[in-house]
Image 1 (tube, helix red, strand yellow):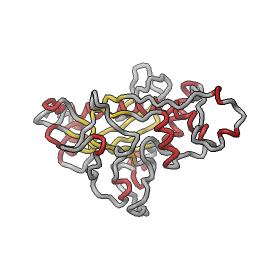
Image 2 (spheres, one colour):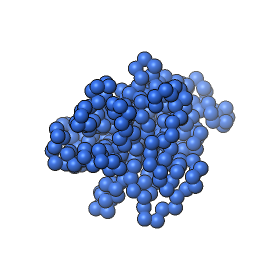
Image 3 (cartoon, helix red, strand yellow):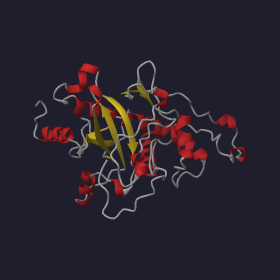
Image 4 (cartoon, helix red, strand yellow):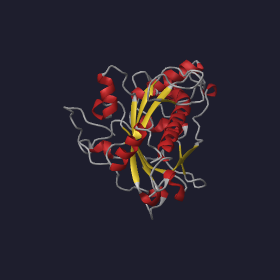
Length: 300
């Protein structure tokens, strides 16, 4: 979610999205740097079964473990269109048309996403799915000299990826706990659900207005941006914008020294990410929620 730059060159409508989940180049690099700083490097050397050159390497296969296919169930409930089957939900994008049609397509129809039949929640991708998605999209940063190197880093990235998404959802729940006015927190239907999401990465064309203004003032730019569509009771949907920042190390109180940003608890003490989560200003409800939060009128 965000404004376009003054002179962007929009990619063709059928172009492959520049940045989708799991992560783009810059995001992956930052997460990997944080993981190395916290744990002294990737926790396990992993094999590169997808790497055609793997057989020529001298290291015995027994020194590596296979990529895990285990998937973690998130705490984020998934919303579906009425009458659609969860496995084949390819509903039209709820996002407004933009100059870049490729970025109007949500990422949640990909094979790496899904829902848990028992809880109805989103499921995070496994190590194998995460790895295969990066290779399939050719989303390899310059530092990834081989598929083997990428596979090794996946084990460090996935816990951060999952924890940051959980923190983003917690921030959205905080906003939703005071909205809508008629049913704060959508209590009538068991709480809000995530309908769809899309990643916009680091393309300057897709900087959010707030991030762009902060950049003009000399502050750091986000290393990633997501747009999430949240569904309330009765099928009402509201869009949120999430800017991801690489923050300073959290203090003992867990509070960020960056005004307006919230620390992401990743389960690794030295990791520090800050999320700026807010409703998108493309609806009256988004404006109302932001106005009330700014003036301390959340209960109205």
